[in-house]
Length: 188
Image (cartoon, rainbow, N blue to C red):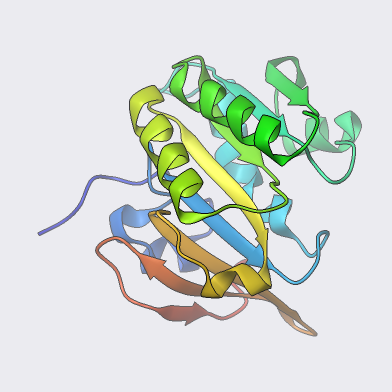
């Protein structure tokens, strides 16, 4: 039995391994990484471009960035094709405010996607984000340190980015309706 259709990632090798053929819609996806700047945004750009610009199936939507570790660079985002007029960047004070802001944005039905970088995320807060994403019909992307792999999470998809000399591999640790797998050099 096939699950709901996912949002195509823009990378056929990755879509082939994800249940629904892409990012799980209306759900939390966790991306675990050792440090920022290893291609995590490149991984998301094709889907974010479609969400911000709209296509034959979706109207243009807002993309919220909650507490990004680096200031997003508009010329680079424009070069990818992202509609930068549809980006909201917020820098809440502290982790509890960050989680509250993210939950409100996810549940609002005003966002197409919410990207967030929390300092920490326990199982209860993860579940609240998941419920808010379902309520607001929103894609939620949570960036977490690699050590969080041992923690409880309500995320529909949990993956680890692993850079190497030939590209970046993605370890799919858990996915609803899928199996753990490593996608070697996903963009190649």
